[in-house]
Length: 175
Image 1 (cartoon, rainbow, N blue to C red):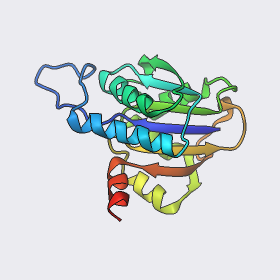
Image 2: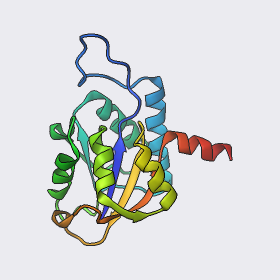
Image 3: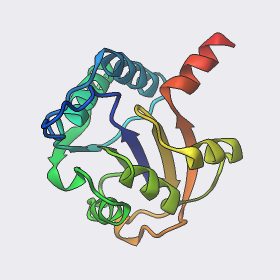
């Protein structure tokens, strides 16, 4: 099984008195989401299902990622992902049907970052160290699990296959 965790792209600053839920992507975020989508397409990081928070910035991130994919997966907009803690995120993942072999979750920090940290036990050492520092906007963590039943997902059961961010992609382009 493969779990792909994607933090929403960079959003506009909240104005005083503005609700958090309707915040939109800023210009950089729009570009970054498209870049991450293109990266996913180039590297075959395809999901069978996408769970996306209902917040506007996560919806916009998903739309730009999906536009880059040859065959975007079915999407479910999930209100419970908005401001979800790691336990809630993992609980939602565990409810995924066994037919789904690869699941994409587009959400928010700190819950997404903490869920990744709790689920990963092994994988690329450098990538794990970078992920431990944080999951930045447009950060993408790909975690592989043995088994075929999402209900049996457990802490420290995953292997970090890769971790990329918009910054790491820009640095790789300069090399």
